[in-house]
Amino acid sequence: MLHYLLGRGLAGVAGLATVILLVRFMDVQSYAGFTALTGLIALSGILAGLGLDRAISRYVPEARLERSAKELGQFIWRITAVKLLAALVVSGVFYLFWQPILRLFSDVHLIHFPLALACFVIAETLFQHFSAVFQALLKQKALTRILTVQWAGRLTMIVWAIFADNAISLQESLLIMALPEMLGVLVFVLVLTHYLSQLGITQQAEHKLVKATNNSEKNWPDWNAIARMASHNYGFTLLAAPPQGYFMKMLAAIFLPTQMVAAYGFFISIAERVRQYIPLHLLYSLIEPVMIGNYIQNRSFSTLNHRCQLLYKSNLIILIPLMAWVLAAGALIISSLTGGKYHEYSWLLALVMLQLTVGSHVVLLQLILNSVGASQLLVKAGFYALIGMALFLAVALNIHLQLLVVAPLVFSLVCNAYIIQALNRDGYPYQLSRQLFFGATASGVIACLVVYVAMHQAFLTTPNTYFLTMVSGVLIALVYFACLYFFKAIRADEMHLVKSILKG
Image (cartoon, rainbow, N blue to C red; front, side):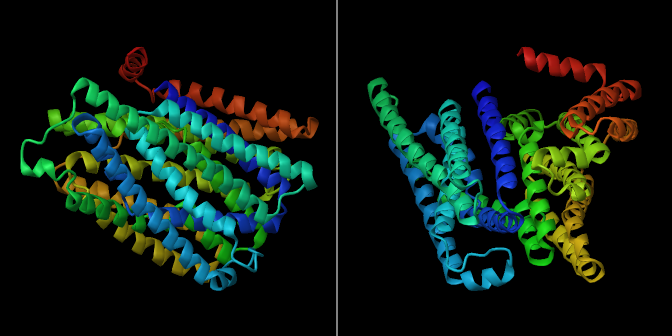
């Protein structure tokens, strides 16, 4: 847990520094082009992933516990080869269709297909793959060190580019992102090869090689079962792609003006950094097997529902005051981060944070569906939510182009409504706490109003954006948590549970 949180912390701080430096030292058109291409690269990573991430988290621990190091290595390298081949195919498709891509993204001013883009696609796919492998092997310490290599490399290259010509071009930004990630993949391969070699020696010395007891075990793993698991998760991932940040960045780059595309891309990058630290996303890979295992053991949906409510409450306690802060002092916050750019689009950041709040509940419902063995509802929910989003986009693009940024919120709302209704229909009474929503929301509204009035008065006498940004954040936290206590949104038994987890 310590190395897990440390790795997330280092990556988050370095990632935020990278985003801020890029937005400050890239001109608006170059950053808008960077926004479009990073969305394209993230989409390529999803396409090349083939839904195999869940197979990694499912079968690698089993192989580590019950199979030989040779079988574990064969499984990992085969999945790696499949993902590498998929990444090469995606890169080839981008190369063949580069000119149509340029016509879609008017802010991408690279006439010839950049080799850095292909490197970035391949490196991103394999880096995420090996990260999942190392987490499944509980090699979090090694993963943290490799993350440090990756982000330190990016920051070093940014500083070098700034000192070279005091600006960063689109081509340079792709190299800055790709080369350290490729170095990280190389380190992953070296460390994993050494680990598997040492594991094999240890198993031979301790006579712990597992012998299959029947024919089915000899044919481990069951590739048909892996294919089914991957196809379900891949189907839902593809259906849920349109509301994701990487897809919306591409959509914005096609329809919206350059200034707004750059601002929207920057805000999505900020939201992605925030998402890494809200409890449900931060600890999901650690929480999921524990929650599922506990439900399988006890078959108590009420206990599962209660614990999921606690998880979502922890999300709201972080996200709602952040939204209140953005609404009350968004222009100050954005000006401080960007050096005076994009502050007129502060409402966009608030909308992105709202989408993150609603979307995180879909992740919670996904955990519940996996626990009760109803993962097929994910695909159905994604299908209906995608229809709802498409209809909204069809209307929005005819009314006002800027309304397209609301589409991800529509997707999440439809997805939430369908899954909750399906759970109740199938005998799983999932219920949201009204007291939770009232207390958390009312506290946010009050904090926002108090700080907005205070900042409006303070700005007339102290036009120091950095100072006012910090003061407004502190005020939001004080007022919000005081209101939470007043509305009794947090119960004593919940505080006791948190304390027991921290002590344990």
